Every structure is written in C-alpha cells, then in structure tokens.
Length: 164
Ligand SMILES: C[S@@+](CC[C@H](N)C(=O)[O-])C[C@H]1O[C@@H](n2cnc3c(N)ncnc32)[C@H](O)[C@@H]1O
Figure 1: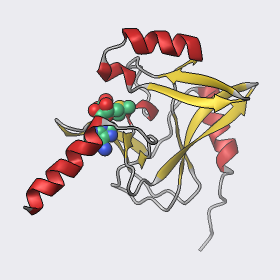
Figure 2: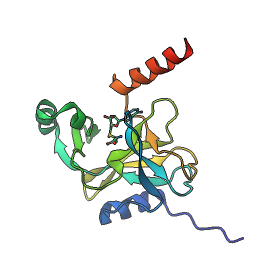
Figure 3: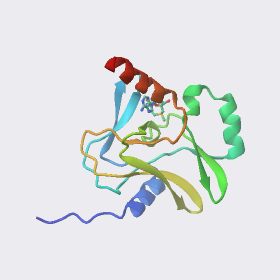
C-alpha cells in the first residue's frame, strides 16, 4: 500500500490563512440548546495536523477593552486575547462570517486540539492543531484557558446532581 505524504502542518496552515478558506474534513453541527453548534471531523486527522484558523478582526488591547464594555455577554466570548511580541492583542470573531474556527467549543478536561499562533507577513494568526489522533465524527475542542466560564460550573453542577 502506498502511504500518503504528510503535508507539513505549518505550511498547510499558511495555505488556509492565505486563501481565507476552511479545510475540507470539518463541518458545523447543532449539538443542543446548551452548547449550541460545534465543529466535527468528517475525516481522520493525525496528531499535529492543522485544523482551522480562528479567523476574525485583529485588534489592539485598547480596542478589545472598548468592545468588552459594549458587547453583550454572548459576543464577548468571541474576543480571543493573546500575547504577541510582548504586547496584548485580540482577534474578534464576533461576526457570523461562515468561518468554522469561531464555532469550536471549549473542553478543559480532554480537548483534542490546541490554539497556537503563526506569524504570516508580520501578523499573528490563531490556528488550531490536533493534539492527538481525531476520528471521523469526533467534536473538535480546545481549552479556552483558565477563566470561570459559566458553562463549566453548569456542567459540574449537572454531573453532581445526577450522582446524588
Ligand atoms: C466561541 S462560541 C462556540 C460556538 C457556539 N457553540 C455557537 O453555537 O455559536 C462560545 C460559546 O459556545 C458555548 N460553549 C463553548 N464551549 C462549551 C461547553 N463546553 N459547554 C457548553 N457550552 C459551550 C458557550 O455558549 C460559549 O459562549
């Protein structure tokens, strides 16, 4: 059997950053009223594979703080803050633009992807990479980071009341 040559994950990410497209092999699906939509693999991914870019508007810390004050809670969660070259930046993905990266849900226990940034033409881009093998049908998740995200305590509460 002939083995498929693996595409370099960083080169793959750059291709999708440049074209502004999402990868084939990932799809959006409605999960439930609590979680909303999520992104699911429709093909197998290897550990380390590039999955998606968290696409949006790159804004400064100051602009991010202003939007934090004016946005509704449901939109604030789309403001992704990160350090790049010693400064705080933010990608605002609040706009429904049909891109898939903005719809990936949080998992702080057993995520299968990790957000990293790649620099392309001097600008940072947030990209998700697989942290283990991902099978067809699995939901793509990553850890949104340490914060008291409201859904995390609801999940704990639901599990607790079920075991009583
Ligand atoms: C960046 S959006 C992800 C896409 C979202 N599920 C949707 O349908 O638009 C983040 C929102 O998804 C939901 N969410 C993300 N991770 C979740 C989780 N583990 N459990 C429940 N809800 C979650 C929360 O409502 C959160 O405000």
